[in-house]
Image (tube, rainbow, N blue to C red; front, side):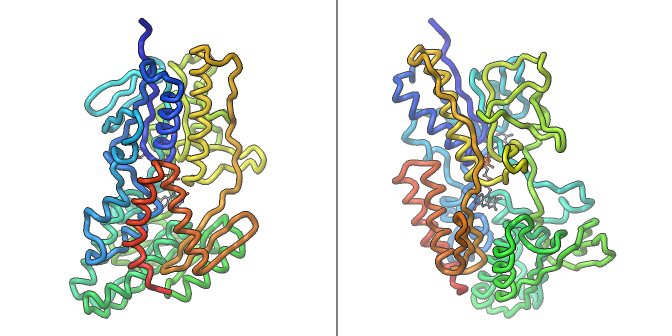
Length: 429
Ligand SMILES: Cc1cc2nc3c(=O)[nH]c(=O)nc-3n(C[C@H](O)[C@H](O)[C@H](O)COP(=O)(O)OP(=O)(O)OC[C@H]3O[C@@H](n4cnc5c(N)ncnc54)[C@H](O)[C@@H]3O)c2cc1C
């Protein structure tokens, strides 16, 4: 009898979960569950629901305790895939043998026939001396709790002033600064400490949100000013010492808490793979059908290998720019990967003689930038909505993200729970 085929998805982030669920559903529909296994691997037992990380970093313990926060930010993968025939393995991948077809992880080894690399990105410290050692970041649930605890401890200890500096004025830095400002009011009342907190964003570009359009930058700048966030532009970090940032301009900025939100790069595990890369940054690229190519034409890769999301660099063929590392891109690419693998399987099983492969076509995705309280700036096509209605759009987008990675019942349950907790954070008007 023919060996059962393994479809292995590495990473249960937005892209990996979506791919696993889409493939599992189709395999069931095609009555191929006895011939194909869908296996999902992740180093964590939970999916990090990144759109709520800012809120988790700025939620008082009286508003939500650890298990409550964990339930909506670090969502157990078991709950998300319960309805589907997906075999989940909690394991940290250590090496990948793409020639022999083996996945090595901390406590075992696995063979694949179809492989999907969806292992996301990691914080980019750009080799700036002292940056990693002296900063907090905002990439995981643990990171969010570390930010929350540092701020909380500082104010609870009765300190009279606190300097929070955020390095990087992209959307992560701006959104975090906004949430911190909203939380401070509540925190001061709660701790009865009228601590003088100064939140500053430092950015190397001439303004916040580099790459965003003028109108968005303008609205966001006005909002930040209104809620008391300071900004410092055209300042490149040279090195970081404990409590002191040294800038290339010769200036020094003192801090009590420094949070680095200056960028991410594809997971370093991707750097070890014998796959085709783009010239400039040597990042792994795929063909428009999301399949990976060998590093050199003479190399024979094992099975079919696909990659998506933050783990790769994808050039928009029209603008020739790289597409941003956002959840929506990973989700759309996941649909392309799932479709193309299923089409191959249908051809292999002689269910169809004509495969309908799809390609990924980047579009400008709608986006939303919440900046403290019930305020967000949303861009949908050519329309910009800011203020309360932008915030309404934000909460609907969050529901949509959840619907993309789990069944509707689970999505609505998680979303309403999150909304109930985080709305308490959004008191700032
Ligand atoms: C604070 C923050 C807020 C964000 N907000 C938004 C937003 O509002 N909207 C939006 O569109 N995007 C947002 N993003 C970006 C979005 O989260 C990413 O673009 C998206 O998660 C990429 O999906 P992915 O599947 O490629 O990777 P990820 O979702 O990062 O998933 C990668 C998975 O791989 C696993 N993994 C990594 N290495 C290993 C290993 N060695 N072994 C096993 N498992 C491994 C990880 O545990 C993780 O579960 C935000 C990001 C951050 C940090």
